[in-house]
Length: 102
Image 1 (tube, rainbow, N blue to C red):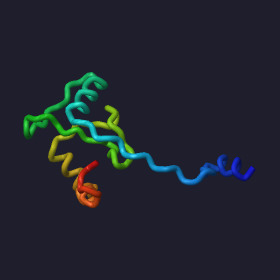
Image 2 (image 1 turned 30 degrees about the vertical axis):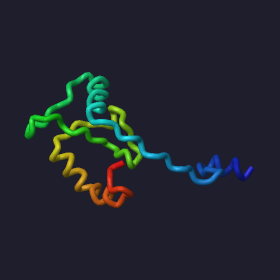
Image 3 (image 1 turned 180 degrees about the vertical axis):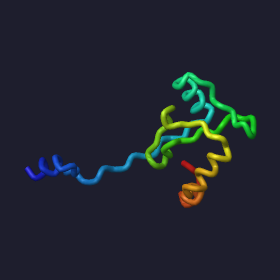
Image 4 (image 1 turned 90 degrees about the vertical axis):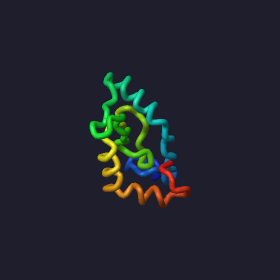
């Protein structure tokens, strides 16, 4: 009965849930292709560089985000880098084993 009451109260009677591993990073070209097909639009170019805009995850993979087109937004490179700097991501990534973004 206590287990049933705990489950009803929102607690997990079997203990904490294990955290899921972050989604695997996929090539930017694949993200652009999926985004274009889903939104039926061409991926925008960065006006400053003339190159494709960066593929920005709205919710970072490391924070439980995924590679779905709804979680990807085109962003000019300088804005994308500024967002990461403002969030402290470079420091966070550097603290990971191996120093990468995986």
